[in-house]
Image 1: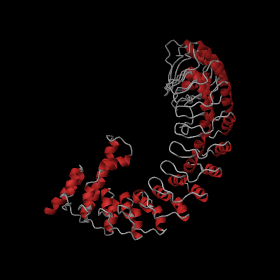
Image 2: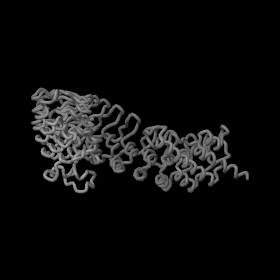
Image 3: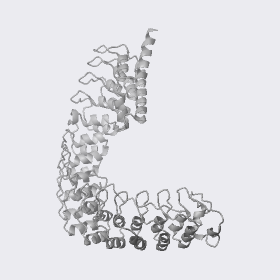
Image 4: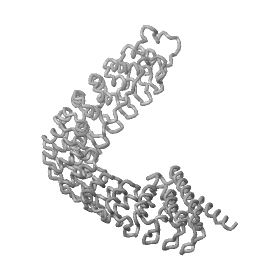
Length: 578
């Protein structure tokens, strides 16, 4: 998206050692003296074959002299054997350097000595690209007659015109157009020079390009127009110019987003105000059903945008394809002041998405205490069932948000209310692995003996997820380590059978399953499981207990390949018979 495309990667010109001395910064001292060595020594008088040194970036004295624009030193170095087309680490030649410093005289000397005007750096940028990016018009005038085409593209598919437009160099753009630059040339993302000029807010370049026939409605591969580009980056003057030319204000990209969507997402309130004044559809849904109001509700800097949309008739209760209202979006991202604005303007507090979650469920899931407070104060129902019939308190406990749990408990919610599977908030806290939540719930009267519909206690959940400190807390407060569920399994069975591979992948996200990181994470989880087993065994858990299928904890440790757990349980069983 245009959100992340802040600038074109122009040639990195770096810095050079201008004062020489001992070269302690990585550049040889001779480089710094390149511009002042005349009168001290004439390299042509040396009787041996002089080997020109290079610094740590492979820049030669000729690179430095070219960058400093010292034509006399350049001439001297070349006549003394310096390679005119030598390349540094970035494949920049002295001609690239001379152009970057806008030294026409240096460029002429280098070209006189057969400098390659088509030389490319590692980004495939030629001296003309560098000239365009650095406003080196006079240098470009010297180079262009020697080129077969001014439309050569760099690694990103960008021509010199792209670079000139991006950097707002009107005179350079004029020169390139006069010399045959393709005004509709596109880069590898199908972006024209007009896209980049609009994105950077160079109104004079935008006007010049359009006067020469640039298409105001051109689209890149993702369907972004110049209006999208300008709106996303807050370029109000360009936006006004394009609107005055009559471009389609509600044109969508491949995601269904209009310029108003992008302006709201990026918090460009001046652009939002301009677009709404021009009649942009404030309720236009994108491909996912999200309107500009959803984007304003979610974005980091969208508070004023949201107010502008609401004041211009945006539907505060419109829902996306997955059922999320703008209030849900504020709950996801914790925008509590915006939630207040929506509620004050008729936002439905207990509206549900396709999973049955209200904004309160969402705020609890993501741990936004201030937003929870706003919703509860405004009358949100804390006893409304959401996904899997869980309550907001379940979600806060499951995701280890103790402050949110405290806030929800203060609203008077019955602490042992089960979801449709019979799980209480203490089951959720044990599964989530947060000791602080468990202690808070216990101190608030939660029953740690409560079983779900399968007969499992919170201790079973803590053991299944290898949460050692949760197991320790529950056992210390009186949880029965040999309590069985409906299948006859104890916490020891669950700890021995915990799925290490799943937990490792959850820990590392999308890490490759064969990666070293995944293996290390698996080892850590297995150690945690062993720690849980050891604690349970030390607290009188019976390793010989068999479930209804006849399996004990040794069977489960062996079945799931937990070597440490298997050794630990086996040794404990053996010691019982000695």
